[in-house]
Image 1 (spheres, rainbow, N blue to C red):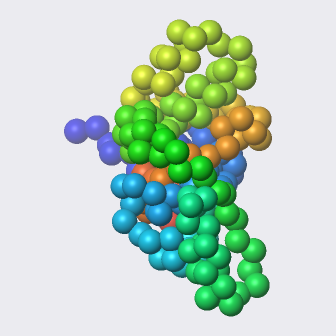
Image 2: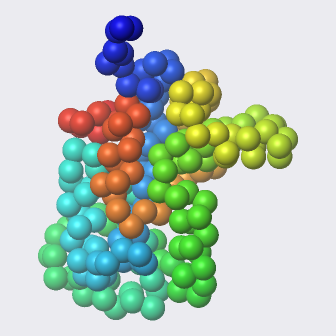
Length: 188
């Protein structure tokens, strides 16, 4: 029987922890107030602060909130009485259901598809054609995607691919940990 590797997929691909983390800082917009998330705006403000303070908080981006519910956001922020900065993105409500459905269809909450988006972004920056970009987006093998990502410049990639929204911070955090891109302890 061959020996079982204890290396993570990222380590096997040569993606060092510091480089991996550079691709993840602020990557996940905390969209818990949007469908299919079930939190109220007030609950999402409190949960967002908890996520940002957690060991994995380095991957948590801003809190998107519907413009139509700005008064609820302001009430929730006033109720907290904290002087800590709060990253907030106001989102127009029109077409929200269609946008959420398109995101779900595109990402299918699959960490490999998220890697494909980052790899395709890197490839587009390098001048790859549409067919190559489509191949990166369709690739479901984490090893080659992580290997391609290990050769990319995280600063350049993240300048173009700033973040994606998720109704659950814990799911993508768990997926990124499983790939070895995010440490259990300190988000490294």
